[in-house]
Length: 257
Image 1: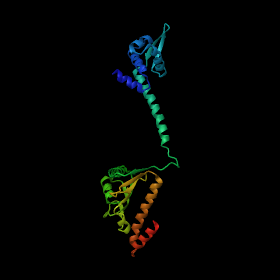
Image 2: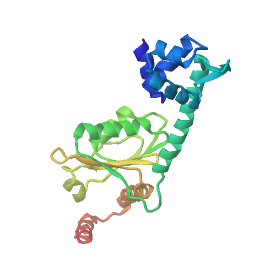
Image 3: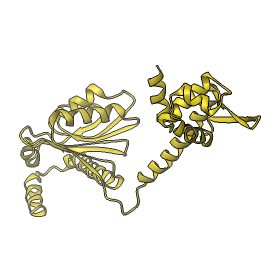
Image 4: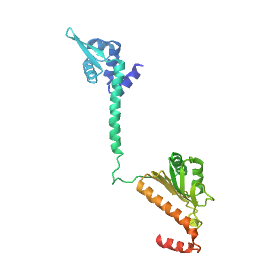
C-alpha cells in the first residue's frame, strides 16, 4: 500500500523522499525534522531538502515553538483539491498548445489518407455512412450501393449517380450504359461524400483495390461538381433522339489523350 501511494504521489511531482516524508507527516502531525527522519526512513542529510520542497509545493508547513520547527502536512482533502487544480491548469495549457498544432493555414499541405486493404476500405465507407448527419453524395457501383442500403439512416438524403444498379432508391439515377461504363466495369471507381466535410473515393477493382480519404473542402466541392455534372448529363441526354454515343466516345478520347 505504501509503495502504491509513493508511486501515485511521484506522478504529481513529489520525489521519493518527499513522498515518504509527506505520508509520515499525515500520520504524525506536529513533529520535528529529526523525528520525521526516523519515522519516514528519509536520511537526515535529505530530510530538510525534502521538507523545503514540500513547502514549495504547498504540501507541508511548520509552526515555530521554543525555537523549534514542528512540521505538519496539508490535509488529504486539501491535497487532493490542490492536485486537481494543478492538473486542470496543466490540461488547459496542454489543450491550448495542442490546438495550436491543429491550426491549418491557407498554405498548409493537404493531407490525404491512402487505403489499399479491402476490409479497411469497406470499414471506412461503412463508418462514413453511419456517421452522416444530413447528406451523402455518391458516384457508386452495386458493391458500394449495397453498403449504403445496409448502413444508411432513414433521415439522410442520398443523392448522386449509380452504375449498373437497377432502379436505385433514394435521390439517385442510374448512369446510362455507355462505352465508358463498359470500360469501367473492372475498376469500378467510386466517390462517397458525407455532409460536404468528408470524402472517400477510389476503386474497388479486386486486383488493384485502393481508396483515398480527404477532408479538404476544395477537393470535395470539385468532386461534388463532377458528380452533379454527371447527373445532369445523364438526366437530360435521353431527351435527344439521335444516337450521339459514338461522338461522345471520340471526344472523350481526344480530351484525355
